[in-house]
Length: 259
Image 1 (tube, rainbow, N blue to C red):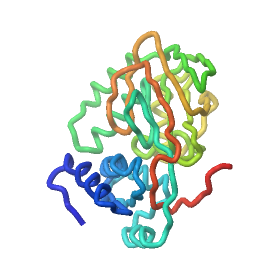
Image 2 (spheres, rainbow, N blue to C red):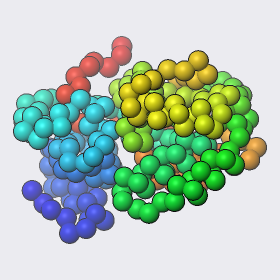
Image 3 (cartoon, rainbow, N blue to C red):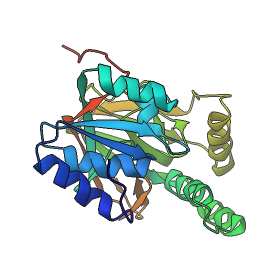
């Protein structure tokens, strides 16, 4: 076991373990730690293991890894690795999802609150008030699609942001990304929808459209903010693609790949 002196050392330590020929590299921490270790494992024969120590743990939840550490450790010792997909947006990898438009602002605000950073609710509400549904142009596997949407989420798995079930049917092992369009939502309807999801009260909505694809391009006449796995990535256009079976990971999830 290696305890890094600072978070920036985590990728270096994980890559060093892979280069030494480690068959299993375990990330003990939250989603950020898991992502950094997973980045080092991509492209190698090493498997990623997870001991969930964070508050949200979207990735562990999607992989059905128990929150109890003794059970998670037992899983590491007994389960064979599976292969899961990752995504790329404008060349940056992500494991959970990409949010575009108002959803990126909502997730940024919640992330700041969870990290104990000062974030002004009034400033956030002023940002929300400025938003209007925008005409977005999507190209999904070379199929054009246009809609007026307040937000677009492109999900690799069911959970994004603060553990919100935005794409309940998304799977980490199907070679596809789910594209969730929040069409004709008012700003406050979208906030109420996300709050409802957070408290487990709702998941579907008649004005939500879900599509799926391997390669998605999102454009808007006025640039929209883009955020992926807690990182701000500028504005649209966003070029998003799936990288199938990119990471080997020890998981409670043991579903076979689609034939």
